[in-house]
Length: 314
Image 1 (cartoon, helix red, strand yellow):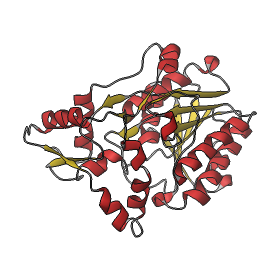
Image 2 (tube, rainbow, N blue to C red):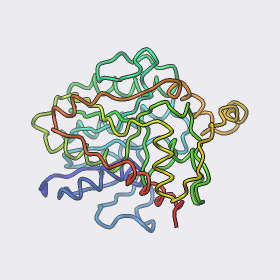
Image 3 (tube, helix red, strand yellow):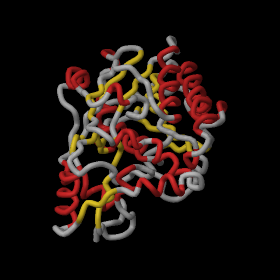
Image 4 (cartoon, one colour):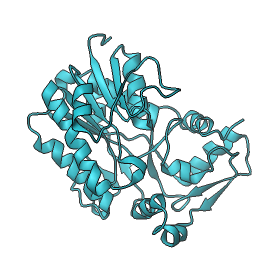
């Protein structure tokens, strides 16, 4: 139990932040969260919600008073202005972590890697991204590496999915709120890809934080998650829906070029196409050496829970 430990979560209403908060609560942590409207309905009553904005340094600093861990799981609103907002937001979290001697946790991604590092990604592989967002991710991690007076933890993951996930590839493959008729897979049906089930990600972060005394100052780990191809994902979805007639359809990449200039999300999706041109997985041997195992929900269970969360199952 960690009854004396306190964590501040930025992005606790999102997928990764919410699951990290849930995992810490299960372990007896005191959890605070920064949110613009702390009185809005539906917020978890076990969390100490503080009103504020992650873009305001004073709000973050005030909410972080006395915490042991600060989780930076927040993104610029509406997936806009990453180039001008992502680093200032991280700087606010760094300043608050520094002021409190707290460890800063950053859920990482595969966006900061280029094809020269594929197909198996290790923690120390070179980061030469092809995209704007990938370059921002590299800059964010560099900020943590250069902040030698702040302890940090990065858990890099594949594409997120889970009941609380939104704005992710799994949501693009189905139609949330409707029965599943098909899966729009962004790659060849037999091409494997790394998927990260968010409850497992939250559990992994919590277990790592329980080993604070063993972590490096600038700690980086890779989460393998589910490495599956489109056929395996389709089979799991068929079993979850009870519909053996579901088909795998090709994702309409042409639409991202046509509508990308007008729809921010489609423009962001188009940037990520290179991640779907060849197999891609994460090497988790360092994580296994630290924890002994990686939390792993069976694929069928994870897919069914995700579809329920999206309102796609009766």
